[in-house]
Length: 449
Image 1 (cartoon, rainbow, N blue to C red):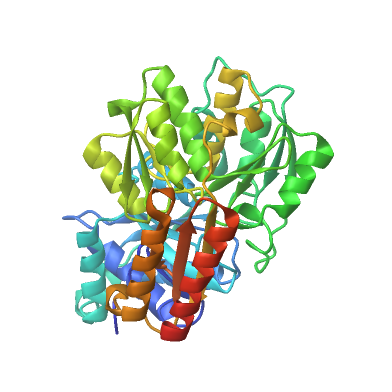
Image 2: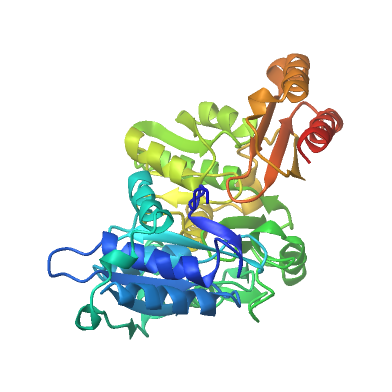
């Protein structure tokens, strides 16, 4: 058995190893053991998105935690950042989210937060893996008198909505503003509309009827076609699309154009800079960010740091370098003045606030950053050897980088959560970019597919 944890928790096809009931039970046990202290039982918040497999995994976690003397607190469907908030505000020892984020319904995953609202450290994840994979848990289980009790918390939506609303400036109002939300038939389907309605917005919602299998299906942050259409049809000022677990945001302007995470970061970082709140004058994004983001940072007078791909690495670099804003081009944004983790609804609130403060439509604000033509092709792979040891690929990348010079770049990397290789090329034109990207994707397919 290999490692359980990837770049964002444990993830895989539901009802198959490692995303089966047995591993969930063991994770529950390991978390309860890891966070218990002398005479103190570990209190662990358990939340989930809307996938049908969530019921099985929730029950398994609950059983595992109670068997190890811990006390699971079930909160039902709530966005990932909502679990981080509840774990922190309830002074729980940990929080576990059952979700595979933007993946299709047949996948699921487990993300774990500490009581401080931050995701677990590598060392804590290693401890959990060691307990499970080296079969150390059975000898640690208490007798019947030492088992724990489960509880259910019913008022989490209200608590989380108050927390979200507090991230929107009190001197601003959304009154009279028409907003379309796409909740991806996922975890934001209740809280997001209510939060915006309570702030006075005129809200229309699409893809908010989860049935266990329609999460992320042709909707949400990965598929904005319906949202773009609805925004134009209804004359809305903005469209906001979340992913299945609510930690990502992609926006749509009033003309129906998709606005990337990079553009949102530039808009919000510039506002913070103007208000003297851009700590250390620094914006953190990842190596996947468009070249245009780097150019825009220079233009508006703040520094930029590119971290490894994955929100945990963005957060690590933000904390290490003292930045309050960071994120990924795919819509995962962290506003450390408001939350410990990426939160799509908080990101949406900051974007709407920026529009109100600037008094400009989103289409105009989005022009703050020029986007270099970019092409991304995902290639399914059978194995993940070190890419530097695939000679044909190394040679092709080197040649293309030489031809692009200062006018573009190449990035080839494996997905941290799927058997997939991501090939990305940026260049001076759509034609050149697409040509080079396809060339590299074909090599990846023939060598690793």
